[in-house]
Length: 237
Ligand SMILES: NC(=O)c1ccc[n+]([C@@H]2O[C@H](COP(=O)([O-])OP(=O)(O)OC[C@H]3O[C@@H](n4cnc5c(N)ncnc54)[C@H](OP(=O)(O)O)[C@@H]3O)[C@@H](O)[C@H]2O)c1
Image (tube, rainbow, N blue to C red; front, side):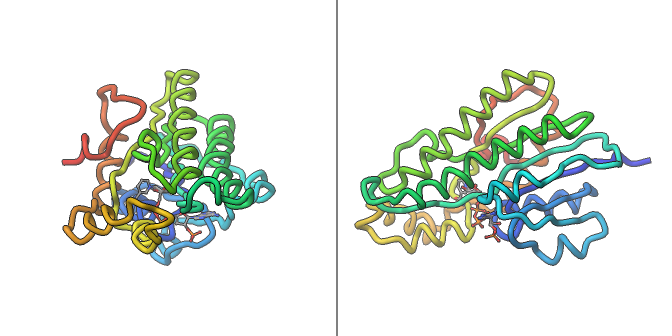
């Protein structure tokens, strides 16, 4: 009998999350998407399912259950849903903009991970879509940089608390997704570095979401120990 593997991914409607869900389905995993919108290829697949949840809504998040009556050989959670948040000088960001960005990118990933660790039985691995912006200060991205820095540190703490599981945050690189299009559409007065992102896109230097997905699935299978925070580019083949 083939291995029964379960993948839970947040933010599967586009970009990196959609590619991860598609790659896991292709490899025969049971894939559960969580988010506001689902791609048809997931909900129409016999191994796919989707739970509607606005992850910035604490009440909705609290109601989610990750336990299942079936048992799996391995369950993986990828906390991937995210927002760029307010792109403007920090002094101009409002409470609600900051709160939404930190709640979605950081707090919801922390709460879902806590649920995952306490509700899911058996072998498991936990991943966070982190960012180079967690370690590199970008003018205009104060909430995003802070939210991802917190995610990296949270992953590092969890990895220490649970040495029995693989727990990682990964830096995907600049990936060709709707979030990159949103970045390129920002005004230079709000984001002085926008020109570099336009150049990277026009030079064809963006990473494909499919590359992130295949690399993540490769890392999940790796037996060797790798850093808690790693770059996708170091493991892509
Ligand atoms: N693209 C890059 O270069 C890059 C670089 C570093 C890190 N990242 C990270 O990669 C992750 C995925 O981003 P992406 O680049 O693939 O961009 P994307 O295509 O915009 O994907 C973002 C995903 O998050 C979901 N989402 C947004 N708000 C949500 C909410 N309130 N509740 C539930 N789901 C929500 C979106 O779905 P709906 O809008 O349908 O709800 C979408 O599926 C993010 O954490 C991002 O910070 C991206």
